[in-house]
Image 1 (spheres, one colour):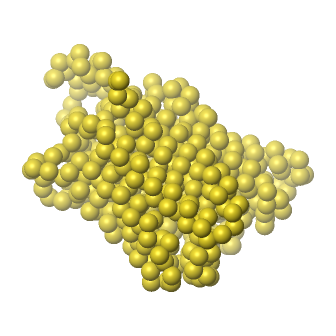
Image 2 (cartoon, one colour):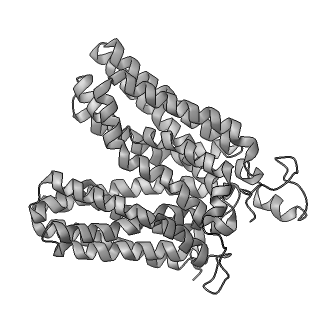
Image 3 (tube, helix red, strand yellow):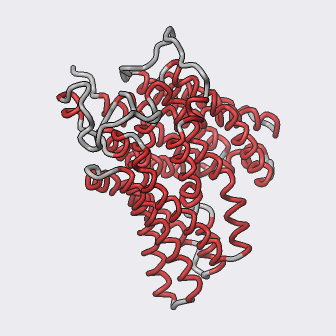
Length: 430
């Protein structure tokens, strides 16, 4: 029997991973509160502290990717999280909880840069955009399926139900590790390969890539709006029912699951920088719409229509930005130091994600309209700067050449999408 293709195995791994994550993520706080009796506030503080500690391993992740290959780090991260989940039923207090959660946090931190590097190793050109689009779609579906499974298990209403969920999530990570390990990874650096020297100095000298990283910081804060700011804004400022929050979240997640692939197919022929900037601009438009709804105090029917429209615009922005920006960043990182570059880029997601609850709620208490305007200004500046940065990024990152043209072109021929010239530090050499 013919073995499944690389793409099929990869997507199967992502579905298994996302299903396990979807089972646990909605009840991460409730799990330890239920089984240990610790207050929810203390559980939240311990989880946040462990997440911050996990960020310490981010530079090490980049070095390991460049030394041993992305696949090894992806598999290792899965197994580390599986071991962490296996210890959860043994937790009986705050110290044990911190140790178990920290173990999982180290595995969590390793995932984004290693999985992006792995995709960059196994697919190139426009196929990279397509695979990342399918990944986003299938992961959203898997997260939703996992949440439904967790809800069904929790109907038992016992400690055994909670333990079954975390152990099932751990088992899912083991299965995902086995699937990813079965995928051949051509071009990875073997254990005996000579490592690229100078640590992170090569990344520090790659100014276009560092700029690309900094531009993502306000965008990452924008992504957190749906989970942090919008629920409070809708219920406390606009007087909307709490049930609306869940409906809007469903609109966003289902929209991504259903539309990510067709949207990416539409934009795949355009420059990645332009599609990314357009997606960011739609974030700005949605934030302005939310601000206007708060300032105008419209009738209830108009309010609901406006909220759904603004959420739809936000979702469209995410569809344009998500997979395309990931492909842009992975392609802008030089192959020999891709792990380190993507580890640095991951900080532009991890730090805003950690700070967003405090920063966004603080802005919300200062001025409701002001919060939306600050977010609008930040993402608008990122979109404009992204367009100005375009000429300084590698040609193959901005507009990838199809693999057929790459194979047909002579080694010294210039890229058909950009004029020939000196190769920048950020030039992808694959």
